[in-house]
Length: 246
Length: 240
Image (cartoon, rainbow over the protein chains, first blue to last red):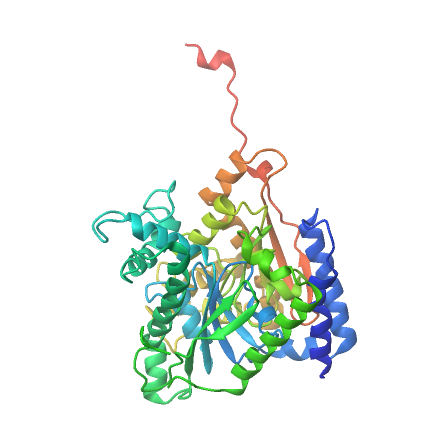
């Protein structure tokens, strides 16, 4: 086992292993700063070159577009190391063409692998699913996904397209618990297709710059900690992934 | 093309299996408990997308501790709907107690903005990376950063030519600017005004040194005491 891998085993899972009650840290800020000091020391002791080497430049192999959900930290759940994955996390792992922040990231950091990772029990998808059942005439009424906030609050503006999309999936008569995983999956498929349709990716494929860019859709199961590859990966010349994908 | 395989993909998927198995063995309740209830992170992290700054790893925290928004240059822009939505969600719905803006050494966004700042024309939208058009999303997203740096350099008497001197200063200044932006938002101001004693929200500015792995608290934290104090008028002035 490489130095880093054994250190990883000790630390990244170790934190979960050794944390004891009380569950809630009394001073999370102090805990994070001392956690950082411990981690940095352990890494340096195990591999003195690690930080100086990664400081020179980053060479990530993957751009991760994931949810901001606290339970889905990409580097931890993939057993990767700092330097491996460039990360964009937002509510509901959305890849919208009109989201300047996302598009800026895609332009700045597109790598050979682009992974859209959604997750079970996604609050954004759940809220949008529930709201889509309340909306009787999508597109004609202001969409309020999170009740208690006005339609033009940033959160509802952000979730409106997701609510409209989920409303189009034909899940209105499916019980919520069954519909949610379907909506989570369909959202990931839609975001994979959305990324593939961006100029960044289309140009890369057409001009054969980074010709081997592939875009993948993954779903992370909070119950088990396991990632599932949805098998909808797309490369140059691929057709949109759809509901019939395996 | 439904089975694209790449060595890194295989590594990440097998890394995931190993990690999940290890957690399962050492703490079999972790995943079911984490999945079975809503997330309750204590912190919102606004950081850079840079691959070397994975928040959960560098703070030694667990999945479930930190809600995350990462973008190019760890920016808080008022017209960034995605960031504002995240802020609203994390502060108002999840009730996080801490919001941390974390910058880092070797930030490519700051470097690019610094280089471009010398060509900024006041009143014109700057082009940060000239391989892309002025209205490309990346240049639009970095325009505020580049403009801000163009102002900071002369005002702070930072060298405009020696990158090695200028960039570290600008990285720190950027964190301060983003903390200021954050504290001006209605979400933060409202939280300061309305949260009960004992549940106050604090905004922090941190700096991560990629060369040492160490986080530094920049000690620019702000809490409810930052709210402007209500002005008190003497009664003599009110009575006419």
